[in-house]
Image 1 (cartoon, rainbow, N blue to C red):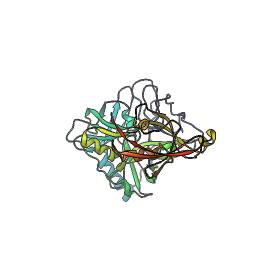
Image 2: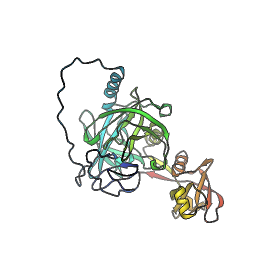
Image 3: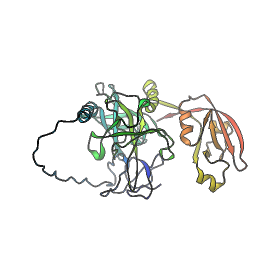
Length: 373
């Protein structure tokens, strides 16, 4: 999937811009981010620092003087957005990874704990954090989940302003959404919109469940908070869908989902997750027709790591996982969500279909563990 400013079909991208690289969704870094022309839609994510010059300086036009007129009173909605902005922006930080890229983050505890995106920090173990009061400190990456696109960073501060957390499970379509971040280096920029959809799944979103919003998410907003009208963080901004004629399709990780991962890091100082040991691709109608697969949806195993729990449990390349425990599997996100709720040492029951004849097998696999970072 190529990353172009103009494209014929919608493309979803999480981008961490660094020296001549672009990360598309969660795939490896592949191509240089092209200069954004007027009218082009720019992928959401981090801003390049160092390396090759990727973005030109934004054009700033002089304001056009308007005839003097009596100022109309601010509406109740405007007053509320102003209140929320003043409440939340002090807890929004900039995150810079030298020679890689930059993005945003939200402080969730006074002792310096920050939530951001995994694609913002990349593989770095330390990052540079900029606070709203001008302080610059070094933050330590405590853990990351590339599949969920969440990372936890700790900075050596005990008096950090905190963004209050909301409940993403209670979101309603149509309610106000406010995004805060650092687009194009313009620190703590506020944009408004609505919650366009909740529990938005999709193959182009990596199979995860997202909050959809039309609040603008521009380069540098990744990792910043999406907040409700009460100023509570309900999501972590992650990606934007773009394409010719497409706009206003931003996506954020629900805060409840992000905190499931973060709470383990905050409690133990590291992130330990269950390990299966497979690589896979989603099965869709096109893939099924091309290779004459016996099913039209599921997860096709493309590699089984030697010595892994999957190998010990009898999984093979070309097996198609159609169910994990009691959950039907339509895409990789279904597998990831079930595994995220389990612990190393737990046993998972996998139903697989084996090409070419479509024979079925049920395998019990005892999960191993891996630690990130």
